[in-house]
Image (cartoon, rainbow, N blue to C red):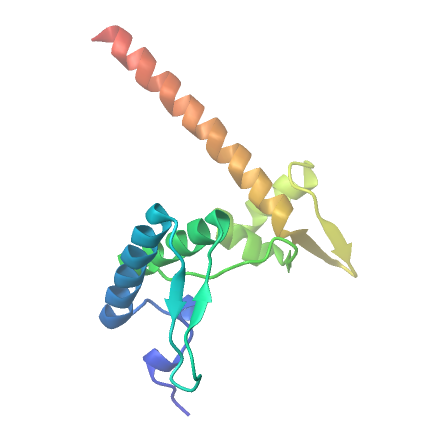
Length: 152
């Protein structure tokens, strides 16, 4: 049985033009309300009255990031920080090969647990490694830019 693309989760496919437009529109509404500190009023066709929802700054920021990616046309998958990931899932998140990821695990650069014969990486450990790696890369790039500026 073939499932139409728009019936699949967005994380498994690219968002459609309509979904991108809706995400951009909702992001603009959230941004306008977040700036004013206003409460969002949500209408449910089945409810007798609207529901007022106050979004915290952290939740607003998370939703804005999600909507920004969908609005740009990126496929998005949310990963809870407590989730245990396979080595292949972890390698995909870091955009590296699975053998390279395994070498990082064996060198102790990323914490992991063994379940039977399989390695499992807690998402929070993976994202901490990614944050440190990205910070290190950013610093190296800044240093290169500064060195380049000295030669001009």
